[in-house]
Length: 115
Image 1 (tube, rainbow, N blue to C red):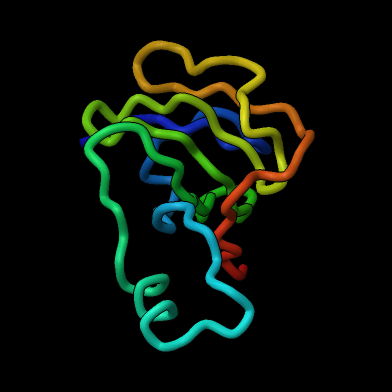
Image 2 (cartoon, one colour):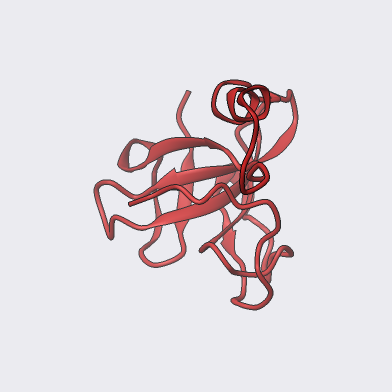
C-alpha cells in the first residue's frame, strides 16, 4: 500500500514521510467517567470508507494535520491544518494526491494530539 499525502506546509510527499495518528474523534466531557475515557482512548470506528485522520509530517515540517481519506482506495480527499475549514478549497488530484483546505472555521471533533 502506497499513496501520497499533501502536507499543508510542504506539499505532496510519499506516505512514508508521515506518521498515522488515528481517527479524528470528539473529546469526551471535561470530567469523563472511566467508561467514556476508555471508549475515547481505545475504541475506534475503523470505517471502510471516508474518514478524517490525524497525520504527522515526521520527515518534513513536523506538523500535525488532518486528512480526509477513503480507507478502501487510499484516495485522499483533502488535507488541512487543525483549525482550518471543514470543506476543502481544492479537491485532491488523481492517484491519491490531496488538495489543501483554506484556513477558516475550526474543525469539528478535533482529537487534540500533543506534539
